[in-house]
Image (tube, rainbow, N blue to C red; front, side, top):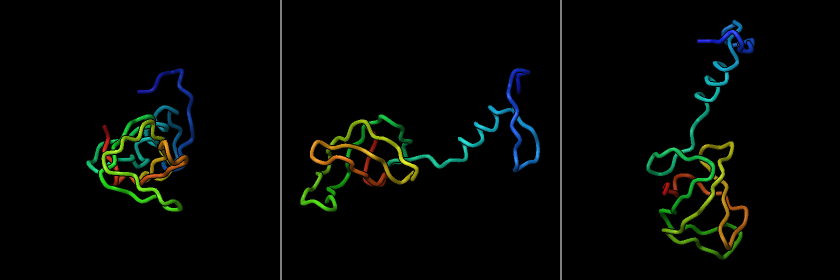
Length: 101
C-alpha cells in the first residue's frame, strides 16, 4: 500500500503511475539471483568453497577443491562471481563450481 509521501514513477509496461517503491521492488524481483552449485542464494561478501579442482586460464596454477574464497562480489552475470585468491587477483569463477559456506 502506498503512502501519501511516496514518489510516483510512470511505469511504461502498464501505462500507469505507480509508487517508486513498488516499481523498485518489482525490478529487484525480476533480476536473476546468483546461486551456488547447491542452489543457495549468493550475496556480496559471502565466502564460498570450491567443489572441484580448477585450472586457471593464462597461468599454470590449479586451485584445489575445498579452497575457501572469501568476500565474493556478484557480477551482472548471475552465473559468475568476482573474487580474489592469494595467488590470483581479479579471479572470476562460475557459480556452478562453488558452494556457499
